[in-house]
Length: 225
Image 1 (tube, one colour):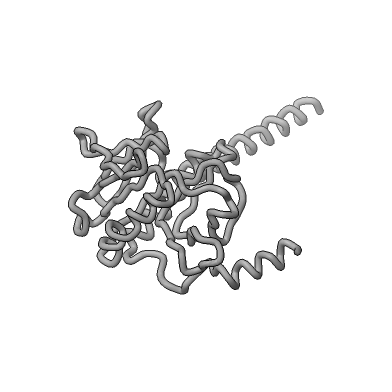
Image 2 (tube, rainbow, N blue to C red):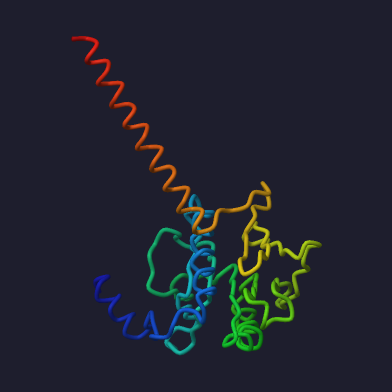
């Protein structure tokens, strides 16, 4: 069976979209996109780490209704640079190492009552919940770590941050934003807007260097004549 035919069959049986909005508010959409970009950049040199956002996670072969769409998930031990329409655990032979859910009015109950026990059964080692609007969770930032088959709360640091062992990052609430800090270096990871600004600055710098090299070459050639 060719890859294209297989992909079409997959899409028919395991659709990659249900037509529903990806998030409830602009705050959630923006933060989800930012976390996706930040985490992909952080793991860019790891070929065995895959980062996705709002992608269907199918966890039972032959049962397409057995699915969830984590806001952000990080999967270790799979091809990191491979594009996917959805993630099927039986095909990948892996489950997410860490899932981050951005809790909203519509998802608060589901995040705690349905997703939490499901992710525990699947073997997701860390489950982190963040409430950007501080309206729907007991605490704005909460987390659970799998220990001996059970989810145990991750104790928050004195400053209210949460350290993820799976990601090697410290999660820090900053208003409606969830900032990420490298545990090893202590450095704050750039968010989506900052990454864009950095790339633009590098592009301008490269353009200026190229223009300067062109000028110097022209001046050198002129001096020879």
